Length: 361
Image 1 (cartoon, rainbow, N blue to C red):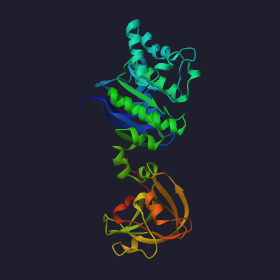
Image 2: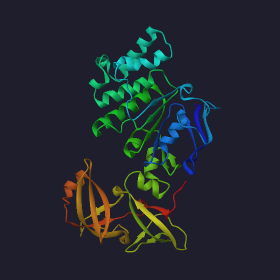
Image 3: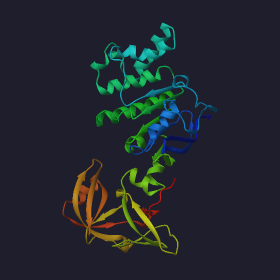
C-alpha cells in the first residue's frame, strides 16, 4: 500500500508561540486517522496546514511524495468538513451537493449521476428538494459530508464535524462516517477532543499535547498501553498514586503497592496509574487468600453511578478517592450500595508506572 500523505518536522509558530512543534507522521492510503487532544493542543492547526488554510513555518507536508506546502487549498484536491455545516442556505440539498461539481465544470449528466450516488450514500434522497433550514442538524451534517465527498477528493479532512450535535445523533453519525470511510476506502483525517469518538472510529489515534504528538497507535493500544501519564489521564479514566519505587514496590503516603514490573533497586519517584475496570471489589470476609495482601485495601462506597453495562463506584479510601467499575450484572448479584464498607484489590499487573512528571514525546 502506498504512503500518500506525510508530515515531516511540521512546525507552526505565531510570533514567539509554537503551536505545532516538529511533528512527524505517515498516513497510509485509505487509513482513518484521528487527531485527539485537549483544546489548544494544536490539532486543528495541523489539519489547517494539511489543507493549506494555514502556512507552514518549518517542515513539509508531502502528498504522493511531493511537497505541497506552496499549493493553495483549491489545488490540493482535499475535501474538508467543518464543525459548522457551512451549507448554502438558498440552495436545496441536491444543489449544495452539486455545487463543487459545477465549479469543476462537469457535464450535467455526470453531475446528476454523482448527486444521486451521494444522496443514496447517506439516505437523503427524499430530502433532495429541501433547503438547509428545513433539515435537522444531523441531516445538515450529512449533506456537508457528501458535498465534500462528491468531487471524489484524495483525502477528506474533518474538523470536529459532530461536536455541535446532541449526543445520540453524534453516536449515530460517527458510525455513518466510519461506514462511508470503509465503503469508499477514502483516506480520512478527523480532529476531535472526544476520546470516545476517536477510539470508536479511528484506525490509528494521534494523541496531542502542547503542539506535539505524544502517542500514535491503534485505539486499543492507546487505551491499554498509554506511554505517558498524560495519555493515561486524557484517554479514558485512570486512578493515580504518587510514590517512591524500589524494585517491585511503590510506597505512597499511605500504602505500599506491589507492581508487576520491577524497577531500579534505587528509590525513584513514580506515578502509578490503574484503570477503574482493573480494580476488583470484595466484601469483608470474602476469600482473599490468592491475593497480594499489600494491594488489598479497605474503603467505603461514597457514590454509585449507573453507566449502562457497568456501574461506577467512587470509593473513599482513608480520605483518598478511588474509582472502580463493576459489571452491572455482578453489581446486582452482590448488592453493593452507597455507604457499604468494602475491600479494593489492585492487581500488580493492573498498574502502569511512569516517571513522575515526565511525558513521553
